[in-house]
Length: 236
Ligand SMILES: [Zn+2]
Ligand SMILES: [Zn+2]
Image (tube, rainbow, N blue to C red; front, side):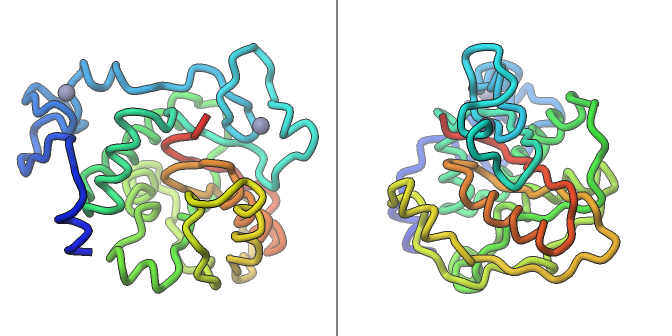
């Protein structure tokens, strides 16, 4: 981890000051560690498939993928596109251990969840678990860190124990779509969730959706009726 930290190029302004913009260093920030200009420049998703969060250009409610083969989750709330500068922030979080980025992502996601306002809130929040080996390497689970401010503000129990990653899978980013599906199969297990009918899975970035879909399937088998996905960014 230390080696990674030193070897990686990190061009986003690295500031130890808390009252400054994480991206440009400006000091006129409010509650978020972002200035108004940088916040407005974030690559927002304006219209997306209501089920999987895939950005859509037309006015359709669902994407072709969800119409053909719906995922195990019912709804996705994903405010941002995985593009510059979100990609840099994700790198900074995962490989440089910038936990302030997780707080920022949590706050941005929370704003989106509050904004949509039309859905009943889930009974539990479940961050996508990391395999213990990966957790040891990284020192933290970024999804759990993103979920913390959301759970706290909404008053929903954060459950980082009921689900486990039981297979140390290869990094999804180096694989083809087909390999990704195979790679993640049977990666998770969950305890029986007695009395819990609705949960939100929290992830940092949804790429193909295979990871959250696999976990959603496991949660459904564990008795959860309604599963939604809350993630910061979605690949196009
Ligand atoms: Zn800024
Ligand atoms: Zn879809």
